[in-house]
Length: 257
Ligand code: PGA
Image (cartoon, rainbow, N blue to C red; front, side, top):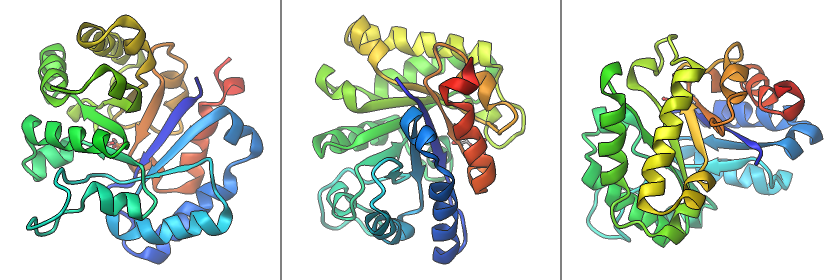
């Protein structure tokens, strides 16, 4: 499986022109080699997605996948300010981040709400990057068990093939102090055990598990080299094409050996 390198732009950049320039910077730097050997996802703010999807059409971009950073669970109706799965699909978006810790923290998202969103996303055939992770280092395993069990309640085995899980310890996000690759690989294994318990070992190994939290071009290779880390979810360092491209390059097989 190619390593997955996902950008989470969060609430950046400030204008549509900058968003297009950032995306083009990344697309222009994707060599045929990188396209073949890595899987790249860009999660942009809602308001830019339509423009970006048009840019993708114009460039016939098929490799780099555009994603949303959130979605709502209902189909339509009286939900002021929300965006439905069908609206995203209509903009050409089929991948979504759900349950990011910043949405849990600033948007008050509970595991129950996240679970409803995941069920709706799968119903609409989206691929989901579910974010999980602890605030306090010594609670990692408990929090992972609690979040994964609650967030994936009622999700069937067949749907797991559209799931990716990002382990993002909250203390490592934006802090410049990432988890160690070895310790995060332990969490990945634990996540797989939880999925195996829910479904089976085959499903557990088929779900890509990503690490997120202060990944940079300097440390990306250390994470991507770990056998149990299938990719990275990158915030701050995804906002400059050169640094994000360097992280993508760190996931190509020739960089890893
Ligand atoms: P960071 O963010 O790379 O800026 O730490 C990662 C994330 O929150 O997804």
